[in-house]
Length: 463
Figure (cartoon, rainbow, N blue to C red):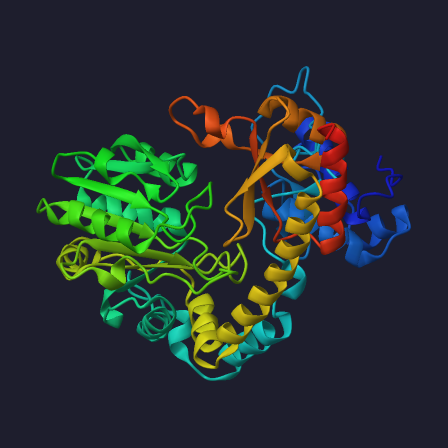
């Protein structure tokens, strides 16, 4: 007997499940003929199409077979032990625990999704399909689309002074994909040095890949070059435009000293992650380290995830000529990890001038949000100090009233505000000057949310 009393599930699915259970339990035996679709439909007061959907599913799973001009018969199914069978629960896709209590999230990873160029992106995507182009169904070589690489090379030359041929540009599916390639080129015997506090994602990627790691302290000018490793076969990973997470901008003199360190040994490299270089508010950007490198010692990294959207997982690196030769030898048999469609859309987005206009709009927008944040933070007076406010999407705020970082985070959470502790980015112990410090990102928040968030923090931190 079949009963249809669960309004949350389609009727064909209820018929299918009940027949399946009766076959598995032996209530309907092998060789037994089922009612015809018409008679089953009449008995259940449903349409023939509904029964046909149930029978088709049973047929595809091998529970029944169709005999021409005769009907549907139950197949012989090996018996399973269904004693004590558990009722399966619906799968839990992640947990929302604690998420509902967060009203204002000062995330450092976010972007302003409200101002994403939806119409332009949609039109470019449509154009990619409207134009007859069989190549869109094929894969690109591992280094990516040559047209996109040309567009990227032109853009980073104009904006960051990066000197390269398009052939030196490698397209990747996120910075983690590029780090994996860099590791393959250098070899896991290379020591990787990183700024302390570290960009933890990159640190973790290199460590998982088997590299020996070391951290180098920073001061107010960035990584302390006199503390860099002395051995050969070393690469140092730096974020000179806006050191993550402190937001320090490395001045020109320190960049020269960093290059001189690399020049001292044959197998030393600088991995320059030009993080947040597009967003600078009080002065013009300092040219990239790569732009002043005359000996091919800099591997330059960039991404579109912070300027367009995290879901646009397209990053790029510029390899020195020497490493490009290794790349051609090692990766020639692979294909690009980035979809052809996404690469074609981004190529058009850059070449038609949309990317430049989008960047200008976002600089203005983020500058306005930053101004709101700084105005609200100034109201807290001498109770705080601020670092990293001249570039990027976040600032580091140190509280001076004796409240610990742990309590800062805890009390903020009680008022529905999420802040990000700086201590998690330290491999070694946290220096005194960086204790009681949290990161506040503002890109994905509205001006109203920023103002309200700081007001809540003022109450939470009792200042």
